[in-house]
Length: 479
Image (cartoon, rainbow, N blue to C red; front, side, top):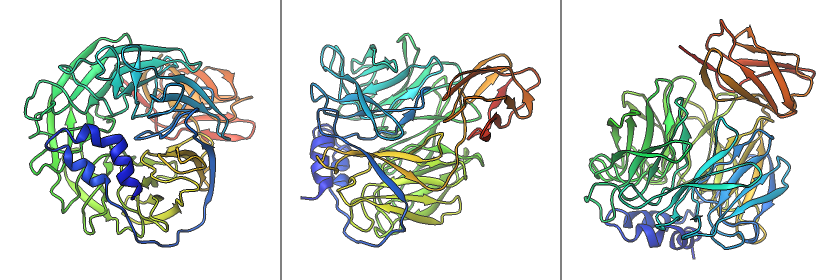
């Protein structure tokens, strides 16, 4: 049987199959790509083979780098109770299971999405089920594995949060639920957008009603203008999914209703690029019915950059990441040389290169997105494949050098900032767009500092014994 069909039965069939529009999702995932081509060689390394005990089947999840330089993520099942787990992994592949979910009513179950590193150093995430109502949870977890359930959804305020959270400039977290909310246009609700404080106080900002979208699965992104942007899998004018913007007060604008010709089912979220536009993918259709890569302006002007043809990949489900070379990198869960999925790069003009074709021994179904760690390499996961067919963690070196990352990426003068890197020991200078800042080297992977008086928006540079490291994105100095 096609691997996508098996994954569909396990992950989506019982949930999506209950709904009118949702039934379409399972049909989408049941397709197989069959065309094969050769892909150029890259430095690809399988770091971890999940085996059930240490977690299994990481799903719509991108890894996130912590203050300690390690990468953190979730598996949708596996762990001590086969209900999913939170893990950390070193850049060289040593994995530690931090928490095994226990499910209803103790804590969450079946986390679909990854984690977000908050400014307080803890990680925040969601589970699609579990909690006191078995409708999903929001949780926080320390780097040492202490988990706190902040919220149990009850259906009226949403349920089945499949997406990761984003921490906004106001310090609160924003996310979505696939089902639930006030609208009865969908059998189990069309989903919501919500805000939640670090203490667990939830505000439902919007209930989708189908006409403005249905079933968000991807994380929101807060743009440089302060507005949030996201996608819904279904709904909109053609029931093919949407791109939307929403203010922190809950005012939603539908920017694009997909119609098939320009793509269908945007499972992955958006990334705001250095040019200010947003980039994303659709799972289906376009010129060859294998999905697309698109760009869209904040005003809603969409451009289809590429239609996959299966030889170069098929059926992307994850968001893109813009690396330090300003090229975008992503994954497809089908197509490529072995029909097992690919890793690709694409320029802002639409020139695509297939970097790696999975072959099941090194993973299959890379549903999750990529992250560029501060050592310059890309890291990701596969849902299945590997030695136990429970999924893998991999790295891909593409020749990019180390950099630093700031947490947060914006703040006022005097605001505390953490600078993350690979080898910061012995750092002698920190500057914000040329303005010197006082700082403390906490460890080889972390520097603490504050935004200095006179700083303006621009790159943060750290001078170390091995050279000068620049931030991957400009730090925005807020007024």
